[in-house]
Length: 315
Image 1 (cartoon, rainbow, N blue to C red):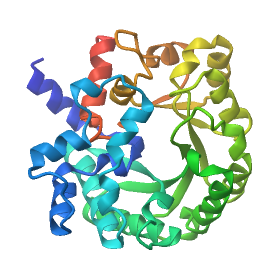
Image 2: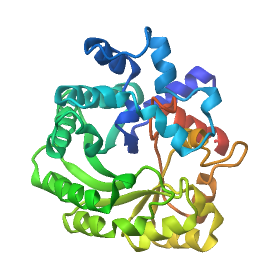
Image 3: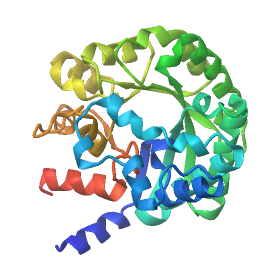
Image 4: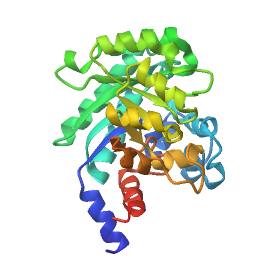
């Protein structure tokens, strides 16, 4: 099968996306247009802007914090309600029309979009509005929001955010709502157990529980996310490969790992030349989901991620 035929065949497959961030997935043309409209563009061309938004060869493997620097510029335009509606719509429509994504859970941290005066509720509702608009234009699409609490903001803010997430829960709406709760950001120095109360609030409110864990920390962080937070899904989970007992536990309890191959390469979560943990997860019988993490930052999409897996499995 030729390269073009393989890409076309992969695009035809109906896909599920369980781990995609809003800020790191805004189409470059959308960010550039909004920056130009608001006089915020820090450079003179979209080509220069692309270098600021997406990982470049010299950036690969420089660590999670270096990767997170690529999120700075989108925040300049996502502090405003209408802009949040528009970027959400463009992200979802791109995944649906260009990569046949039929179920998309978009994750998002409202608190880092309140610097220009939006309340956390407004920041949540803006993205939900974009989801509802996209759903109207994309037949057969299912979508919902996973609210993220940023680790560096601490457990108290996480609890406030969990309550806000529950108030916008899917089961309370006839349209798109919040379906899950997550923690993200710098793992080191911010152990999962500190966020236990926030997760208890989210769980009692009927939200699904996931957490970024084992991306930039050892297996103990994944143990805490499962045992202390009650997570049934783990974002990345790369370090689990170093703990066979943990792998058996995840297989026994069917803890799903949200796999982001290109992102893991970019952050160094999977060292260059090392086989991705996804193959060990599959061998142990651990459920996995093929995800993109940040389509723009990591220069990826659902077609690329699925093709990469197929190539390594030699299917």
